[in-house]
Length: 320
Image 1 (tube, one colour):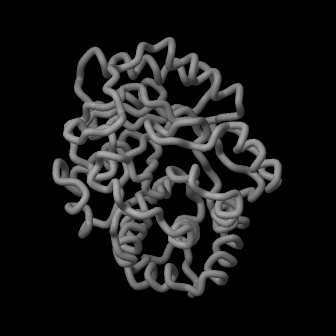
Image 2: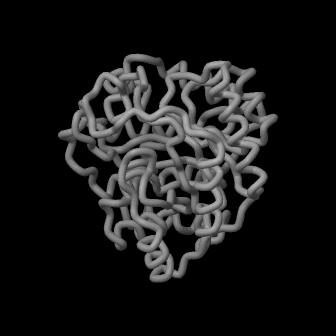
């Protein structure tokens, strides 16, 4: 089945792609990847938690939810200078995008938001792309972030609309889609993906990919996360996700959204070098670097440098 970028994609199209025999799927995704990207280049991003824990949401995977007893300690919003120090270190180790995450349900128009805007301005002055993930945004807040120089906003859909209510009850799928539209309307690029391994079915994974691919504009960045099961959360006992599910998600995302960055995100710390190499072959061309991904473990920078050397990969130069 040949998909063109202009053809409408149906749910059955996505299902057929996802269920393609695995080696054929990887081969086709690798071909499409090479048509639209340099396969030797990977975008290196660093994600810093600038406000940790105490979130009123009930996302079943998240150790930052206040209602769960997890190892994550609550920490207030950081001051601007320590954030910019972390951004400088990230830049000096080869990162081109610096992402700032705050465990908020939604952005409030107050001094804390003003401080985040100062962080964005400072990151841009360092020559980095600036990204935030702060929860739900109004159209005016999105515009203010854009005016501060924000390049990208992350707001994941997490899973299919049908399965969503099994994972989160404190906000709706429509809430998430509205924030994505506010971000898009402000002229900020969209970073949006999901999590694999939360008990969802194959059909849920297919539905998530279909939703992402059929947004008014597909996300410029599509993070594919493997669940990191954290003690104290409702999903603490979920088994480690099968690597083949991750490869299928990445390859299908690459075929559906050929121009997007497909990010191999949470869960890399539990993947072997061979697992990660398969993901890159299948079309992943972005990672988060650094010892932590918000509050969960991530491979260290030295380990990633060794992996890149083995695979002949190089950090991508900045777009901004």
